[in-house]
Amino acid sequence: METLIININEDLLEEQLRIPAALLSKGENVAFPTETVYGLGGNAMDERAISGIYEAKGRPSDNPLIVHISDKSMLNQLAVDIQPYAYELMDAFWPGPLTVVLKKNPNVSNKVTGGLETVAVRMPSHPIALELIKLSGVPVAAPSANLSGKPSPTRADFVIEDLNGRVACIVAAGPCEVGLESTVVDVTGAFPVILRPGVITQEQISEVAGYCSVDPALMDKTESTVPKSPGMKYKHYAPDAEVSVYTGDVVKILKLFETLTIDSVKQGKKVGLMLFDEDLLVFKELQKSWLDTWVDQVVICSEGSSKQLDTFAKNLFSDLRDMDSIGCDLILIHGVSEASIGQAIMNRLEKASEGRVYKI
Ligand code: TXA
Ligand code: MG
Image 1 (cartoon, rainbow, N blue to C red):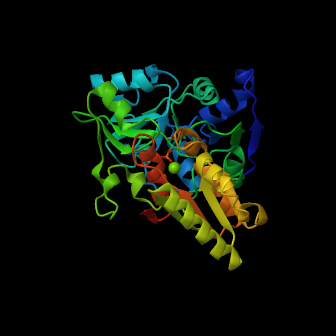
Image 2 (cartoon, rainbow, N blue to C red; image 1 turned 90 degrees about the vertical axis):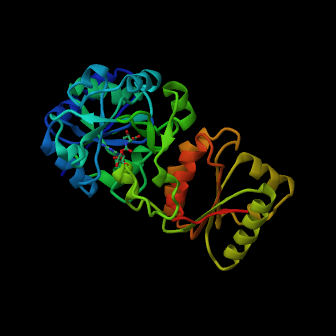
């Protein structure tokens, strides 16, 4: 299949998005940016478009899709029996990176929901996503625009790498601001339950709804509890490199990273380090000359300040993907505590490291 790639700038959106919107309403698949990650869209009410999504991604058909809307008036055709507190959450966080799981309207195909009686819905805040959905005039089902098993794409070049030739159109724009997929919250019960952590935190949801719990399967590192969100049970992206994540005492972590890096480089390996600005300052002050000598063997990604974790969230997937394509053998990551947005960051790092998370 020939893929139409359209590079968009953010003026005159309507004119630039007319063709991709027409493709969507005709049942074709179109990848587009959202504020979280790029999505691969299809008309949620058209089974052919839904099959196209699963096929293009190579995604298991029991893993349901999130339906994206541009206006709350689109909710009624998707969901029924929406609770007052669910509306309060939508009012507080939409448009934005929150997905609500609602009781589904019988109109919605089982193909979208993976056979579940619920449907996941989100109103993204990215102007291109909103305008594209509005112009297409249909709710747009869209999983992340990666091949199944690869990380969610946060830049257009990753989408092109994965989906060129597999979809009708790719709407290419700048990198995604948030960088992690939306928080998925089940709002069908008496109180909200987080099924997938994201940058909208448990505290923020509790503040609006009075209380919020987290699916116990997310906390169970032994993976013996079945998660409520089908997507959370699949093996997620892990780079070819061996990834290890360390949290705890900063001095110990930096000493260990230095020893492991020096040993690995001496064995001819390439090492990737994901560090905070504060860590780099410490290395610089201690005049660690290996940082300058081994520029070809040691790749350093700066994750911003440890006190401001949105940069870490934004860079996480693209840094892992970049370090993988550079050919790093070992990736060492300075982790964070599982509070607030740290819960979402550590959830993704747990998967990328295949559980190699250590507290020292
Ligand atoms: O930020 C995002 O959410 C991005 C952008 C494109 O919007 N989308 C995204 O979609 O991450 P996807 O398909 O990669 O992840 C959707 C997650 C999966 O874990 C899926 O199992 C879960 O949402 N999900 C979808 N429908 C559900 C439902 N009815 N009940 C429980 N979990 C559901
Ligand atoms: Mg995904």
